[in-house]
Length: 253
Image 1 (cartoon, rainbow, N blue to C red):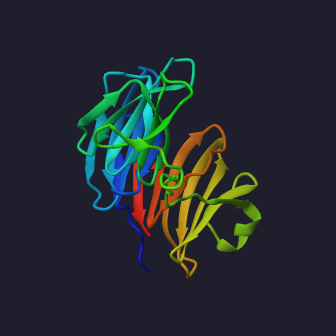
Image 2 (tube, one colour):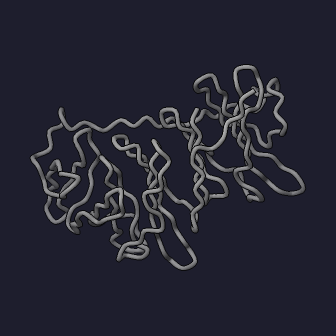
Image 3 (cartoon, rainbow, N blue to C red):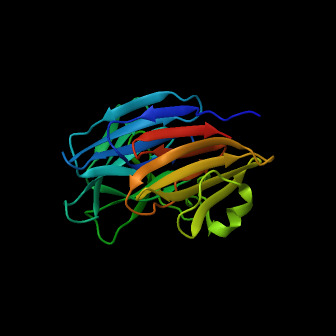
């Protein structure tokens, strides 16, 4: 029986708050936040070859910034108008090496299209949409709805199923709660569940082959206070998850 092993196992210094996968370059970008010190940083990993392009990258704005989108090897960041509101302000573009390509503090992203980012000037009302060049930040032309439709990603999230469904799988852990996250992919069954032992809630991951054997398992979160949301996603043939919130792990299925 062949056991699965991680293709990528990258430990970050701070918890991962958000991940964004660029469909064109197979780059996975992460947003890291240190809530105590009010600092934010970013990292990038190539899902094709496992290379870490950068990690711990910071910007002049140390806290009020975050990931907006990613396209063609470029990460788009946004700032916030204030520390108390969700409204985004401005855009900054960073390439896969961590180099800042451009910044514009009057633009905002409307959506990411198949042709690149569709943006608008926040100082102009009513807003008018334009297609922008992701490499330069320059507006290319007016937005065309039929041509600049929403970019589809290949990220698939697990189903939320009743725990009773898994009684016949003979898993080494008894589910805590009434639900389990589940997905089938490439003849594998992927299960994420919570357990309760010695007054602690833990979250586990199991991968089962078509013969019913467990070929991979991991403890995702230990000593947590409540049930966690979905623990993993699949992008094409990559299983992506976080371990203890700060380690990025990717397996090829």
